[in-house]
Every structure is written in C-alpha cells, then in structure tokens.
Amino acid sequence: MVTTIPVTYKHGFTGFAVPDIDAAGTFYREVLGLDIGDGGMGTLRLTLPGGADVFVYPKEDHTPAVFTILNLEVDDIDQTVDVLAERGVEFLRYDGFEQDARGIASGGGGPRIAWFTDPAGNILSVLQN
Image (cartoon, rainbow, N blue to C red; front, side, top):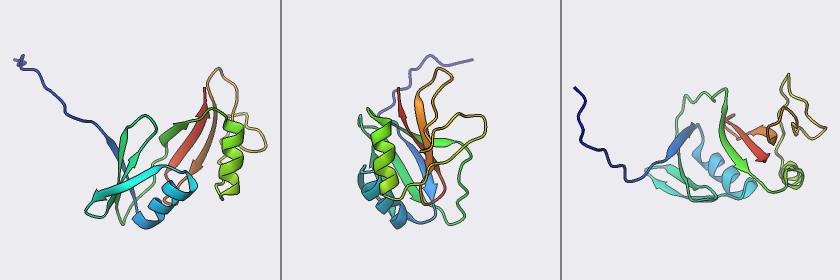
C-alpha cells in the first residue's frame, strides 16, 4: 500500500566528481567564469546562472562520464566559443554531427552547441537556443 503522506523537499542540487579539486576550481572560476564557493570538507559549490547549485567533490579514481554533465546556455555561441578557445578550451568533434571549423554543431532542429571537457575529462557544452 502506498502512503498518502506528502514528501516536501527543501532544496535540490546535482553533483559530479573530479580527481583534482584545485584544478577544477581554477577551470570553473577562471576559464568558464562561474561563481565558485567552498562546499565544505574539500569540495566546491558551483552556482550556475539562474541559481542552481552543483556540488563538485574529489574522487581519486574518477572516471569521466561519457555524456554531457553540464550545459551552459549562452546568447552568442560564436563569441563564447571564441573566448573559451582563447582561454585554452579545445572543442570536441563527434561523428554524425555537422560541426563548423570551431566545433559548433548546427542542424537537426536543435540548438547550436559545442562540447568540451573540464580538466577531469567531464563533458560540458555551451549552447544557443
């Protein structure tokens, strides 16, 4: 029998692992320009545009996910990709996607998107709807 007592959630957040918390902090703060805070006990708290929290924690035997863990929507993907490339970001290329010289995929009716990795190999994207 299922209870009818409601569940009330106070807050929600997501998280991911990195092997080097200092390298992650530098990347997310200095390269991506995100708001980084101390998450306590050797962790980081990213505050995303719009206010969502992301918990970043160290894990020595970290294995990067094979999917995009974080998408950052931008107003101008061309400018964003150029700026990130100047800061050392290398954009990924995937078979089956038409990507321009900078790695921006367009087509298929979805957003314009470009994928890259953080220092831990986690896949991220910038996209323009």
